[in-house]
Image (cartoon, rainbow, N blue to C red; front, top):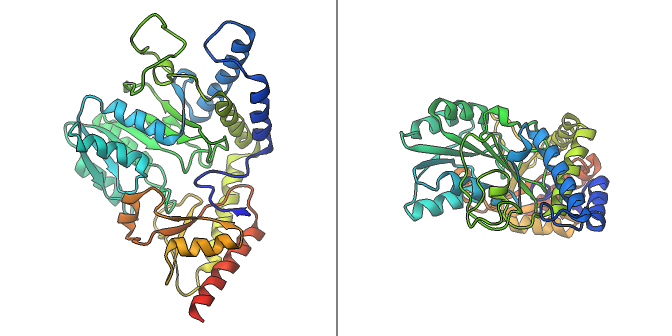
Length: 378
């Protein structure tokens, strides 16, 4: 099998991440922050080391770096926590359901009012669409840094500046760019949410929420934190306030190791490789009749390519390719708003390489997509 579905979860993982997971199972058997014995202390040190590594990578403070189950968990904590007392929230028309659904749920219950800013191929139009929706009671703007469907990079620094001008909390979904682009809180992001198992190369069941601390996040889950145990009230200090229950210590260790892999390999080198594979894929199919590549000329794109095959639904096309051992994501990618914006009523097939894919593998998928189209035409 050849995995071109790395936008969902990177696979394979770096050898160092696999070793870290194995070591964590064998060595870090204590419960971090819950005991003064050697096993607990050793595990606490490993968790803190991973927290420090993630904090440094994104320009955050370790205490403001929260491990989560995934990016969905992080976005729910951020959106529900910031909007707990009501107000107006704006999301983009390219949001993943992990941001769109919690915002919509709050709006349906009339706890908040919700607006959706249209995303355009032109960055200035996109920024202006956000600007027009800002009201006196706007408390948060939620924006994916890059679409998980097309890879389009949104003008997040400009949107961050807009938030600064109006004292609005900027919540960013970095799932498709973190580990590939140099994303920092200093880009103007107040709360950065991302997965640990995609571009950071950790195992599944991992995510991060990083905050600059400017906007307090009310916890949506309460429980044991290993601190303030005699109080019935959730601690207010981070990361404890947002990390109830035993953390995924093994997962956190792998995220830390994944980040070390990126630093060692070189982020620019990694991104250049993935972008080159996307360019090869696009150039290999650009003159193929009946193949539509969903990319414009005026936007920047992360290394993701969505395409449609005329005469086939996205699921049908991906199923034929899967028979050839090619793993791609078909359908709507948990992004209802994005597909409504794109007008892709049958969904798309998504190609998303990783640093471990090769040019020869891209040649293979290009060949089979062309064969697929030729079979339809015959």
